[in-house]
Image 1 (cartoon, rainbow, N blue to C red):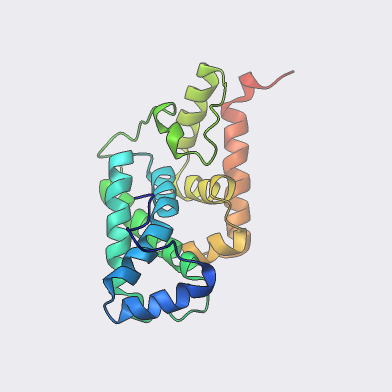
Image 2: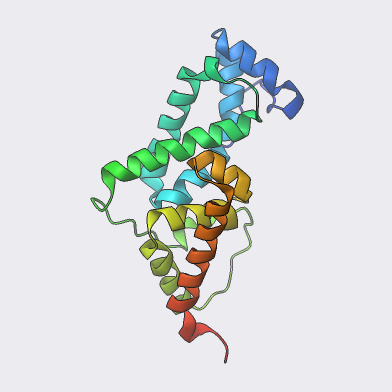
Length: 192
């Protein structure tokens, strides 16, 4: 998923519109180039939102099925990547509603370290890591998703608002509330 299709260079922002136009006409090479350019980031987003690597793989596929079905509706008012991420958020939210609490979303963060943007392993107290993971998982979906999108994926509050269909201020409030709950849950790890 991380490497582009043979003979097809990764999409550059300037030629992405032409790739979209070609993909709309059924050009499989253009569709593959778009997939290769965006699938790794979509996978990281899906994984961080759902906490399950196997489910994240399925959600990436579902996202791109929807992207390519709706490609003709892409108007170019935002970057193609932003539109793809909005679709991914919608797919994940729908899926989480269906599988919510049916599967435990426990993932050992050590195993998930390959999903981090930086390959340098963090040296974190194992108890803190476990408690942080549990505290994030215990957050209500609305708070956890906003926190992940902002703090981990780097979305702005405006982008989160657009992706989730909420006001920018609501995104800020959700991230603030999520951080406040994490501070309370991890208070005994804070230096005096």
